[in-house]
Length: 92
Image (cartoon, rainbow, N blue to C red; front, side, top):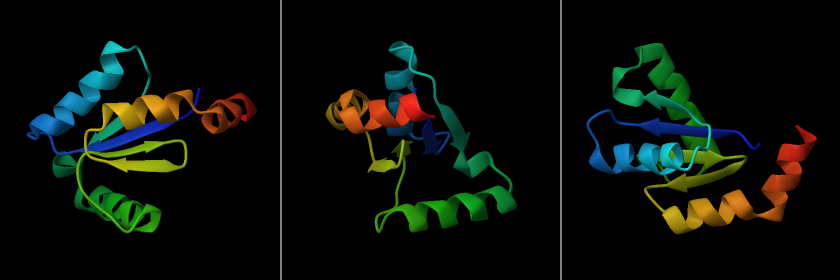
């Protein structure tokens, strides 16, 4: 399965809704509460976010190599079903 990483703000309702989207579907993901992370971890995440896209914001969802900013269930579903991600997951 393709790797899914989510960076959230612990008190953000939209961020929590994003985690719930993946959790209720049984889709494994890694997540980090950005605001609760150490300063060093926050710096690493910020660099990754800026490197991955021109846009930044929370929730920051990476599905494979594709970044989605915000809660976008339609886009999540599209990416999870895409042939490119299925091929990438089978090659991992």
